[in-house]
Length: 314
Image (cartoon, rainbow, N blue to C red):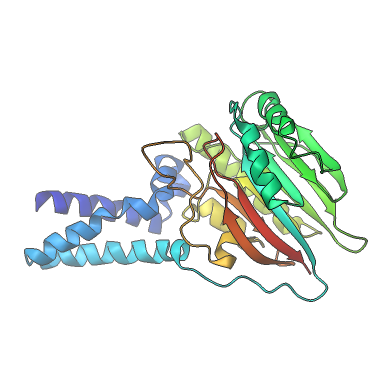
């Protein structure tokens, strides 16, 4: 009984912190708690059962309040939905994104998934000389005439491979990390800007501040964009992070949410004892795109799974 009270009271405090936007003042460890929202609050249901069995009304009331908040926050992540319809005359394209894991000597295994999915645009992050060489050796990139590759030692290299012409490529530094982007010309009338996104993981106070700055910068760029945009990559953020929700509200849609793809975590893909639990790899697209499908790939030696999305530029 005491354990149930302690667990519920602790979870109630965490939930209250989220409701009053504590993460704005204490980015770490609030960001970690918010990331784990789908799983973190599960003990409250066991506490509710204990309260019901022992007829402890105050415990049950607190459990119901916490459980209600948990369901409101988590339901959109698991409820299936319907994809958009691609309008007549739309330009269809497929985008794949993958975090290679910069030290992944097996990155070439992604090549099979590239060949199977046959994306028109590929966005890769954690592109190091090692991982780029391994993916190239797979032969899967040979059909991509246009590319912008900026490999770096460590975790913040990036690359875009495209069947469509690329122009105006740039890689400014945002909060200490490279941010690669380029304009994709789909046809004579239609173009969009692709962003290869890889924010720093908010695992400390300093990193959390940089992570928030990176997401806020993306938000500003989305608001100022003159062309439609697609942001793809490893955001190190879930729907339970306010900076991520602010980015989406700036004028893009999460492909997962539009399609209603359900529970499809992308990280941590390389742990044998624990299945992936967080969806931190995303494809966000301007409303100019119909989003017609979303799927998560399989493990290829990285700690992330690839994501493939079908879009139709109206």
